[in-house]
Length: 193
Image (cartoon, rainbow, N blue to C red; front, top):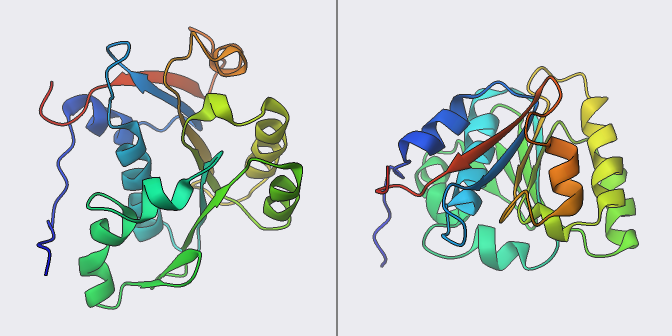
């Protein structure tokens, strides 16, 4: 049987990102071309939000391969939540995780218009997008509107992109000094800073 870690370390920059109160947050790598652990950080955001915010609906979105990247594997959601599952604080269903406080965490891809339509039919309080530059801008705009109309106090959008400079709509949306409530943060993986 594989050993599971009870804690997953974060770097100082990742910790700062977890603590921000920005309603729209863009995560990028501090060093161009170097993985920053943003996918992992999105999973940490998801778990932290669901564990703390009663009745919150969180959606983890990626254009494709969301299960392989975020759910399975040694640093996936299943591994990160094993202890909560063992103690009855989280229950894994087919495509979502239900928390004891009524929060839910779902994961989905958004490659086609039909995917977007299905996602628009459900309530989303917190939207987490990995590889945001791969999600069509029109899909993001519709999902953003849905999240911003939520009345849940935790409503927010956290997106991870390889680089805000190379992702045109991502760069335009967040900008260098984004509008009020929007913030970009460059992070490094644990053990770097």
